[in-house]
Amino acid sequence: MRNTRLRLLAVGAVAALALSACGGGGGESLLEVADNPSFDAGTTMKKLADAGTIKIGIKFDQPGVGYKDPATDEETGFDVEVGKIMAAGLGIAPDKVEFVETISKNREPFLKAGTVDLVIASYSITDDRRTQVGQFGPYYVTGQQLLVRKDDNSINKGEDLSGKKVCSVTGSTSLKSVEEKYGAQPVPFATYSECVTQLKNNSVDAVTTDGAILLGYASQDPDKLKVVGEPFTEERYGIGYKHGDAAFCTYLADTYKKIVDDGIWKKAFDQTLGEAGVDAPTPPAPDPCS
Image: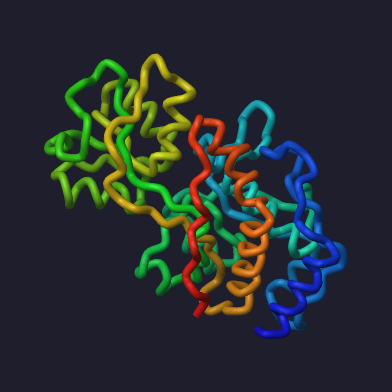
C-alpha cells in the first residue's frame, strides 16, 4: 500500500490534475489526464490503467449531481466530475469513461458482479452497505429535505408528513427515514424523475431525498415545485468499490486529498451544484481506509 501511495504522488507531480476547460460533462473535462501512471502489479489501478477504460455507475436523473441529457446523451453533475477526476489519475481520458446508469437498488449488485468498477451515485455511506461493498468517503455531505407542489402550504417540515404519501427511490435510506421518524406512507419508485412525475400528478404529497437533488428538480420547474424545510438528516456521499480492495481505497483517498488541496474539488462543485446559487462547502474529511 505504501508503494502505491508513493507512486501516486510521483505521478501527481508529473501530471497534476488541473483545470483545462469549463467542465460539466460532455466532451469537456476539468482534468489533465496522468501520463503513463505506474501502479503495483495485480492491483485494480494497474488493471484499469492498462485497459485505458473504466466503468463508473452514476444516476441519470439527478440534475446537478448525476444527469444524462436524453437529447444530447451528455452526462453532467458533481458525481460525474468526481468520476472523471478518479479516472484521470489512472491515466484514463474522459472520453474513455463509460458512465453506466446505476439506480439505487443496483449499486451493491453492480459492484459485486463487476458490472461497474466504481459507483459514484449519491451513494450514502452506511454501516450495512460497508458489509457488502467498499465505500470511500465522504467526498460530499448533504441532508434530506422535502420537495412539494408550489401551491401546497400544508407541508413545511418533517413533522408535517404524518399520513402523507411520500415518494423516494426503492432501496434508498430516505424513504425509511420519513416512515420511521414521521409516520409517512412510503411510495417507492425506481427513479427520482418518476417520483417528481407522481408529485406533479397529485399521486403523492412530497418527494424526499438529499437537498442537492431536490434543488435540481425545483430549478427545472420553479412555477410548480419548491423545496421546503431544513435538512433533517446527514447524508455522507461515498464512492463505492469492490469490498476488501484496500489498495483501491488508498488510491481514491490520495486522489481526493490532492484535488481538495489544489482547489479542484471546489471548482467541480461550483460548476455543477453551485449553479443552483449555493456556496461551496468545506470539503469533508474522509474516513480512514480499512
